[in-house]
Length: 220
Image (tube, rainbow, N blue to C red; front, top):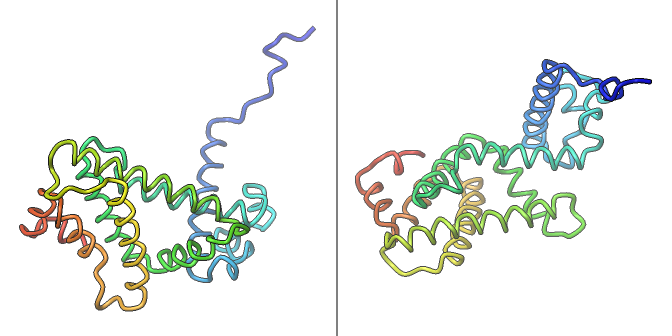
């Protein structure tokens, strides 16, 4: 009779797991580039596979279809954003500074900004493959930004009385609107500066940052 240890499925070597993770990351980076350049509908699985240097079958081994690949790409993009924006920072001002930094970073990847703007508009249709993603993402982002404003309000660090949820909605609306305007005329619109000025209009230390010409005002 075999022991319980013998009955366990063999585990992949640690190095193999690392290789799989690296391959998935490479696929997601390539898909983000392809979708940003060609759009989600025009960008193909073949284009992504070619960019990574693998076969279509090899790519489909990791992501069974284009919808699953899109979902993973969007989550991957969010992981990159979370590395810039400390959404759960104890100091709400740090979250707002992170949003300004993210706006500055977005100005360096116009294709990604265009992809996001296009997909978020298309995804208002309930049958769009990214509909649930964007619905969840907006809800989570509103909640996180509202909590940042709530922490600032509780600490008495706002120059005017604001409703945290409405402030969060306004912040997201401003960021999304700035992205569209920036795509249309990058010489006129400075996304990071406009966002910094908005926060500085009612958050004490962020106003000081902007007036002093600190990193917050210079991120763009």
